[in-house]
Image (tube, rainbow, N blue to C red; front, side, top):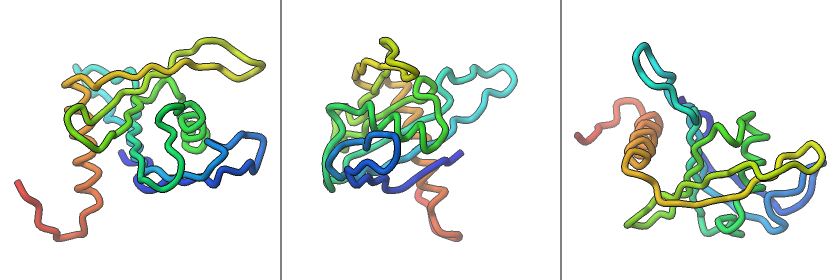
Length: 149
C-alpha cells in the first residue's frame, strides 16, 4: 500500500524543535510503501515498510549521512526507523540498490542514537524492491493505459 510517492524536499532551515535534515537544501525522490501483511501460512515481514530514496541532483546529497533524513521521514510518516527496509537507489547498474541499516548504538536524553551500515541488496531484496516499485508505477498509470507484458 502506497504511503508516499513523490519529491521530498527540505530548505536547510530550522523551523521547529528538530534540526533540519541538512543545513543546505535538497530534494530526493521518495517512495514509501507498507508491505502486504502475511496471510495464513505466509511469513510476516520483520520490516513491514519499504522506503526507497534516490538523489535528484537538486541540492545536497544525504547519502554519506542519512540519519537525519531517516529520522525526519519517520517523524513525518509515523514510522519506526527499525521497522523500515531503507534502500538508496543509486540509479545505476550493477548493484543499483544499497540497503541502509540503522543499528541502535545508545541514547542521548530521550533520543536513540544509531550507527549506520550500508550493504548491497540481496537477490531477494532486489526482487521485493522491484516488485513494489512496479506496483507503484502501475498505480500511477492513467485509467485505460496500455501495459506491456
